[in-house]
Length: 45
Image (cartoon, rainbow, N blue to C red):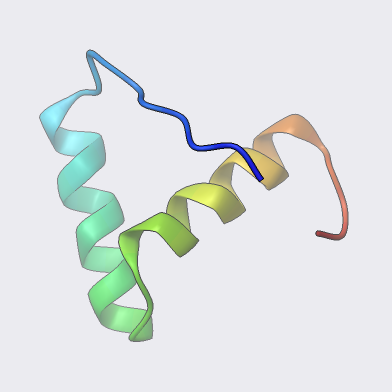
């Protein structure tokens, strides 16, 4: 797997990702990877 750094992310998006992660008891990374997978239309791992 590759590690990626993303710049210029809106503060509101980060706050929303943190809130979703806390709500689900998972890491923010998990929430963001799932969002990318869904947004890109990629299924599986």
